[in-house]
Image (cartoon, rainbow, N blue to C red; front, side, top):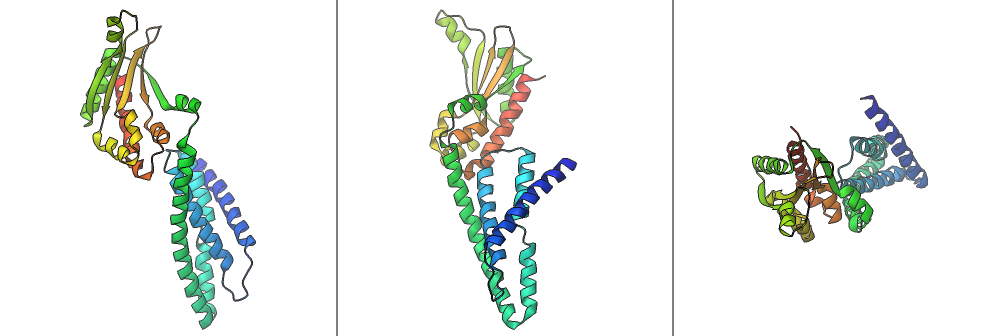
Length: 270
């Protein structure tokens, strides 16, 4: 709990300072209309929309969400000053009450438009950032490999059993070791299994057809030179970045991350 409080305080302090800087940059109006507060709130709404769109593309740690989401964005977008300014204006005079009403209306409408604009900007920015990821990071982060306590054949059997129990389809299995033997070549036990949920996969392909190259999910069980068995799968979150999937794929990708992780843990464990 203490670490969360510290992160919120740090993020909130930075957000509050950003808000004050924005307000200081806006000149005051002589008629009492709180333009500085309005501009700060609209900018905060735009930033909130942008951050929401950008962070929807990746599954970040709790700490990142806490310091940037709850902390920083909370500090920037606080509407306590909005409420205070409205009450002060409304209680001053009849003419000031009309100004307060206009201020509230403009704030709500402008804030809504700013959030939409920020989300559009964030989506476009995410497309650019993830369109051409470096090859090294693709190789490093795209594969998840865990050690299995079972033989290659048994590991693949456990993948199939767990996938089926979770309502997934098992499409095919490929015994690379047997193929190598037929070709007169040597290869330690190596087997591939392809499985998945067409409901999730279809949603992803409706977003970006190219992800069909990497679907359904593939799991490779293989034995190294020392006799240890490993299970390797593609990270669905990485696939989302590789194909620049949009917000419409977020739920399906998260379900795929959970499902693949569950299958992998079961297949490689006790």
